[in-house]
Length: 375
Image (tube, rainbow, N blue to C red):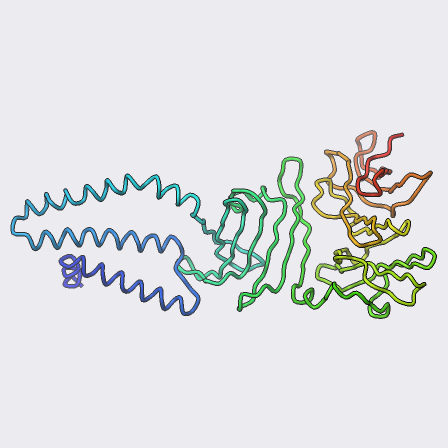
């Protein structure tokens, strides 16, 4: 062992070249099985290689020189320009590193350990790779997380994102499913709960929304309303994960003899959703009976073009003591005013308990915006 150590001391340059060659070969072998070194390991290997090369060159110059003192002096003189160049290019390297540096975190997602690589220049994106210990990681992206706009690290600042969309990939790199998490926060901005929507991409791709002719027996009818010879139907397109379903609107203009798809896109609602058309143009779908005050999840969809397009209704209501209010009934007309009944569970007037308080909202723009009725 001592002989080997002495040989290394006398041939630092050769040993460094062997070290570099070995790591190149090792990286190639790992590449063949879709594995690579972690970032800190790569940086460590590069630093060792650079230091070994510089020290090896100085050593060879020292060994081959007859005048050892001159060799030392010339070696020091040769090192100075290298340090000067490093100092000159340091700002450029630092500036480039800031915009290209992608921090790595070892995290657990869905009860599985991953190496998460964060990219957060204009949008916060996280790629999740297989974890193979502190030295190695996979090369294929297993999960991609889209945390929205910003320039932050979601693992160092977990309460900053409002929502995240995870895309899961198979071994061939094909997207197979998605999960959307909408976060519910308290008044201090801390995440206290979340709504999860799971989407099976394989199943959703089997549905073609461009079918212009649909037989009524092919889809489950959820709601139907007749206006003279025109019939409008909410029907189920497909079931999806998370106790949810895709629905759209069918229309018949010949009293039910033929139906065709009206909706440009299907909307996602809960399996217990309710529907109504108040006239031939305006209709509603109650997707979620909880209206979160931070608008984190669509609760009430509205259409004013017979179901061709849908938008999420907006409720103007502020209450610092609650996170959501509940929809009690479908929208209705009263004295030519469009209304909807809701409830809020809050402190009673004596502030010694809780009670359900009825809230009536009125809309003056066909259900797109709702404001609290004033007595």
